[in-house]
Image (tube, rainbow, N blue to C red; front, side, top):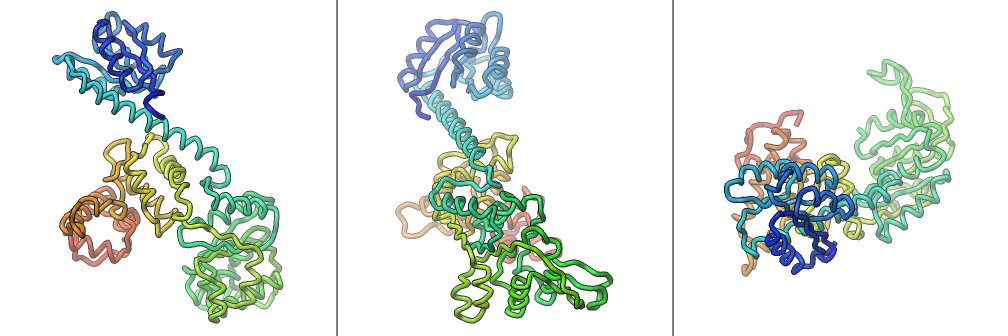
Length: 459
């Protein structure tokens, strides 16, 4: 939204003030209107919906505070600045608590008024842009939260749409954090299996000695601690979808057993001899190159071709940067839907400039970090994680950044996060996007919290 589209209304019982304000406002491209009383202004606002209102604090039968309250009920998105005499500043501050954008003290200089109106115009533009993007996100998020207009992600969505009604095995390939499970859920819940179970398992997190019992279940007495019979994940997902995330992490022995289950469509629990039929759609995902893996002998070739009937390649976030704005507003709505938080142009520029090695997951964590550190309803550049801060620009004219400045920025950021999460180290490292070891090293280095003490099991 540009300044030429700004609808401006000045409300004052002095014609000379109204004319001065309209002259300044029209000079920066506003469409101007005037009202000599609060009642007249409200009648105008009901039909014209001004973007910016400049109103005197003291006006006849209805004062500025009453007018502000009435206008906000009528047009809650209108930005209002109150004009006040020198002796009424306390009342003007109260007006800001009621929703006024700011106040300006009479008599004011023309340049002071111009700067005020320009700041208000920027605020209006920011609010409208954020609202527009939020509405687009709502329109685009019907497919289980998969957000994006880029050609790469739209191609993925077309494939997903074709796979919904098909039982064909699917292999989803993409870097960590690109949303592989989200795509698997979209395939499952968008089709005829939506009412059936969807079971997700991270193969990389399974204890090697327990993988078989987790997938296929076990009979009572099969091993020490098996006090009862327990169905495995294949049985739990029977009739629905089993999502095998990071399939490339499965040991070769388990790959052979998985292949047999896919071919015979039956499982045998650990410690049991009975064949149990299962009808499961398998969707697998990996961040590894399985073709190279089977050529090197670390992944079974026959299992690769069994799983790889249809492959969905998920683009990295750096390959779909045009989707970042939509994703940012999706995450703002997800984590702060009731507070109307917006993001400044400088912060958005930093998000667009970053390469996102952690992809969409890292972007979401960065927004959560900024929401925790913000001091207002606008996320600014300084609220973003240290990795997104433009370190090099702070030391112009030198060949490398000032190490002390960078360390100070890092120390302050970590301290603020640590305070925000009340010392919860797990949450702190998630918000900062660093490993557990790195967090403890930084806490000790910068003397933050109980540094030097061994980490608790809980954190």
